[in-house]
Image (cartoon, rainbow, N blue to C red; front, top):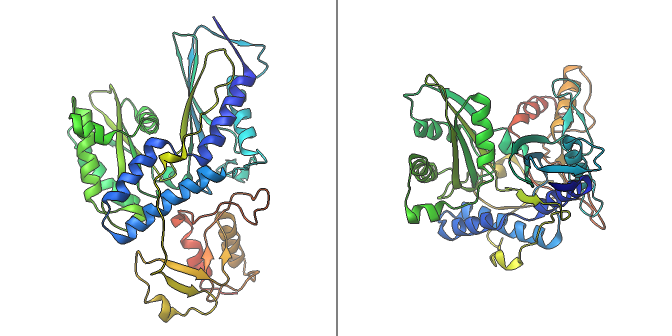
Length: 408
């Protein structure tokens, strides 16, 4: 019988979430560097360079890799010989307390993105709780925990299909990935779940994303079963689609393809596809009764020494730019922006749309203005603004399109 304290689980969850907010998994960094080395498309290579440089800066400064610090997903495997020592909380409550402490940590405040009443008022819970938690009860005397923080952009591109048993899974994936566009921030991972029922296939796809990046090791040793054959086939064929880093074209759309399967009904072939973005974040720990399980920081030597030069970038003053100037911009070109821009995300765009529908005057004039789809992390210490980056916001395209017809 193993005695585990609730404070040890809470502390371990909080530590893991802080850790993954600023440390990419080392295997992911290595895979991204390999993609950088083999990339020939200048725009895509530049995008990968910025991902790697940003990752190293976050590891050094202990600030989030991405402004979207994710919805927390936790996979918990509890041994049947575990006993909770003096616990006053449910297991769900312990995990959510760990989430709360991590996201409200004053040294590295993480963005709270979780909304209660999703079909109604959509009110922010303010501390990123509750997490999505999955449990297994197994023989043993430890508590095994995988913690992940999944961004909304990539999660929104998840797909589920109930295929006919005679359908090709590979063909379905190759047809589906292009429909996802670049809104899931490639290059990243594809998690695929096959079999079971609809909800089981989706769970398998999500859990597959926790597996190590090992596609080149698999290619080197060769596949030993149909699932491994499919991983290699999809890795090659998805990359041959040419979507590339951030949708700019190129050789690397995925860094690995992970597949898990489960027995299914003779009449069924459920298949789920869930992408993980370039901000892949997950950690693992085991509680054995000896205290909290804290993450070990990787050496900064794990990050490649890459410099990024913007000498050939086009300089743009947003206060004076014209539509004729815009017509000269090219996909994949680097722009260095100066001047003033507006910022706004979902709530701002909904408010503008509602005001226009009600015939009300907008508080700002949108004529010839740029709107930056951004929701920064809160600043800490001497920061003016926290980590910020453009959101994958095709969901808001209809709102500014309406607003553009009513400039003020």
